[in-house]
Image 1 (tube, one colour):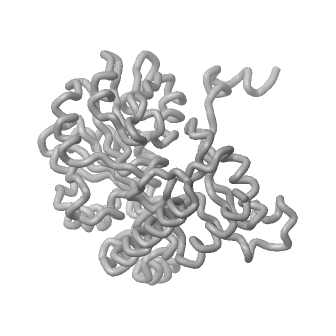
Image 2 (cartoon, rainbow, N blue to C red; image 1 turned 45 degrees about the vertical axis):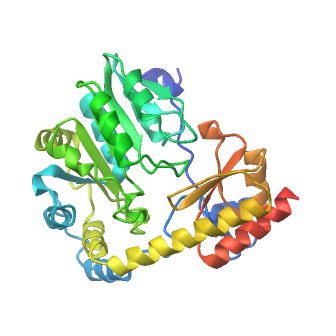
Length: 366
């Protein structure tokens, strides 16, 4: 008897998320002595790193790591409450926004239920749904963007969650406030709408649609955010959900105690107060997007206009180009896992990293 015979039968059939690999591992596999010459532009990380204020907060917190963290993340939730202008009781903090996706599945999904997603949206929605024996209804995108009204129409009686990744990973596109307003009027009352806003802080405040306002109007809206992207704290794994008190209480029942570590909580509080770092991040991303768009136009390469810190570029055999770029010491992300076999996704790096990337891409494409 194999160990898989003892497991839940559906687990063996689950897909696996393909993360961006450490450059040290890639260098070793390719026979390089070290990874010092490699550039990783695969995981949509903040090229500026963490906020300096967050680094200071982590150093200050290090000596207290023998003590369990604040299980309720009170001080971080209080800071988020002031930052977002929502009640503290409407916030739940966790181990990255990915944990919030799993907690939502614990609460709302199971055999005989379904979720609705855009066809090229964050793959973890599908993976988690499958782990809870729920069906995924994938709706084709329109010009690489969520077709919100089609997603509302795709909901069935057994649909419990509908995910809107905005801006969307991996396409970098977004839907605006008017589209969301029309969509919210069309979504069936039995469906919980989850706005995944992992990249929202990269948008200027006057551009970002305000979906938090729906929380005061409905207990069927959940907003997910993270400190991994704009705030540069991906290694700490910290995210949060904003929802009605009723939803937060349900999610709290299935979360593990101490799910947000103490150092992460202190770093996040400090990062929230570092507006200058966020402004520098936006400037770096906007300059990088303009650089790649110009390169693509000059070299007749199709691309998807992006508002996030990455860009999709059509290169032909995406995984082959990805592998050849690794030999040029540049690590990007292939997109065949999303059905985008002709594309690679490139994270915006520093100016020198972006220049090295297109230099390598030119070599590979030639």
